[in-house]
Image 1 (cartoon, rainbow, N blue to C red):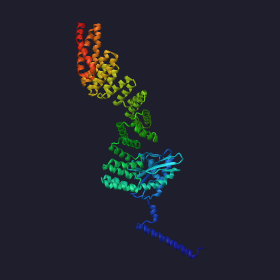
Image 2: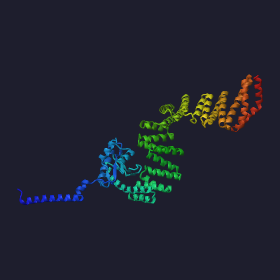
Image 3: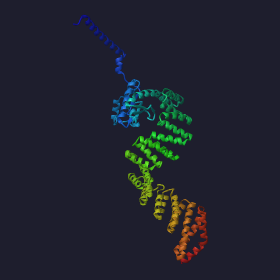
Image 4: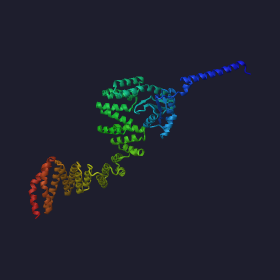
Length: 574
């Protein structure tokens, strides 16, 4: 049975409960939140920084996911949600799935930044998990600002038994590193307003908050660059950054510019190639590196850097594209061929006109003319209206001894662009080599009519090479062809060289025709010899300085035998 004292106690308790409930209602009505209600309603505010942890890269997918998941959970545990909202895995996975990405794979640097931006995160963390020979795992992570994935803060490497074991140390370091972030943001804002002294003060404040801050130092170096500070002062800051993060793109860019300003080409090139390895997908940078290395003839400096980058990122299409260009420029043909072939397998969009010309040239330089011809044939089939490609095709066909294909390729180029500079000249050269001087001269005339400034030079080249060949063959037809090329060149662009080649060919024709005419009493040959006399006299007077000794001999012959040749022509041609 329940005694009376117990009944009183129950009544008292009921009364206390009713009183407490009434008090809670009154407090709620007054706008004051109880601890329990606060806990239930607690969450991020509109101004709470948002933070993302993406899957880490690893040969073992599970290891990368495990490291990222453990760090994400640890950050959520270590941070007040009102001060830092670490985006939960379920929200992250939902966004990835809706965007067509798998939830258990690492993202590229570009995709990671886009994901963070989509989730309106101010910062994110990515990383790499690498197994060690001792059976442990090395975890490297970095804090990245979502506004620019080049702005990264590397975190100390952790060697652990399991990927997830790095979470606590990384979480602690992230907390320390983030202390410099507000100062970095303020530094950038002040720099945009051209308030440089204040911006520098904020950058130094960030470094004071976190001694290893690369982010604050990057802003400091950028401000110094804006102020046109001495190169050595900027380099002092960039070297501090590069000790903390050797792949910092902003620091490498600033260092490259500073070395250029100092005139230190050696360190400028070394820095530029390091930048290329850190940013292989930057097409503008690829061209800059290749052009700069070409200017200094230092292509070999880039090769080991690209080798290392390809070993660390096999199959990366952007890096293969860079390697293809650099290896070709460095004349490391087998590496260029391998990179080019691999590139076509992973990125069909990279197979453009330049791809075919570069790969075909690499095959040709590697003594594989058949593959060079096959490659360029594929190129012209894919891009049949590109005149430049047909010109390259002609050069490769010619190197392979396929003269007919070379002529056809040049004629195709001319049909695409009749005014293409040098094309008719190359065609003339092919005709000359095929002993078709009429066709060669016709091609030169087309070149001149199209306004090709190289036409006289091509004709002069044909006259020079033709003279050597004629002196070897002793053929009057060959010497006559030389005269035609030399006269064309001399009319289009008068020169002592053109005059000399014309006179030298005329002298050889004169000597042989006169001898044979006398021997056979031949009118036609006598007249041919007679026609050369004034040519030798005039041409050697203008071009004799090219070879004074030869000119003296030719002029002496004309003076001595010229009248006799005239008499011989009169006698044989009655």
